[in-house]
Amino acid sequence: MTVADALYALLFVADAPLTVPELAAASGFDRPPVEGALRELQARLDESGPVQLVQLAGGYQLATRPEYASIIARLLQPQRQRLSRSLMEVLAVVAYKQPVTTSEIETVRGVDCSYAIRGLLERRLIKEGARRKTPGRPIEYVTTPEFLHQFKMNSLGELPPLQEGSLAMEAGYNEETK
Image (cartoon, rainbow, N blue to C red):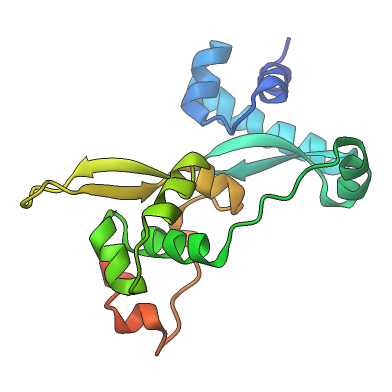
């Protein structure tokens, strides 16, 4: 059994991206051989076949190539889980301004956000972080690895920059406040 084959087997059964330390611990190999084997596996999969190795949400995952999406969809018949506009707005505020409290989100949106926050928590796109050390000790919300996975990002640094003159910029959310 080669290191690359061991990683291939681990990634095949994983239901979420695995980090290099997780792969090293599970395979019993040290970090440098794991990193080399990931490069080898990626090169091998890039040559041919329907599967590719993708870096996602801080880890690695096997995924089918986009050109196979239509036949896979016919088999699985996935139900699209669209986020409503209000959920997307709240999610954007959390992503750009995290950690953020409910009252800060409501200040930006101008409406009650409790329904949207519950919906995003249920979808595991955001989670409760620490409690702010201010009167009332409000909960701070942050995005989750599932958020990165759903939006095909490796880190929050891949969020698109806010446009000048946007409501978010006017509310004081800019690159320095991230």
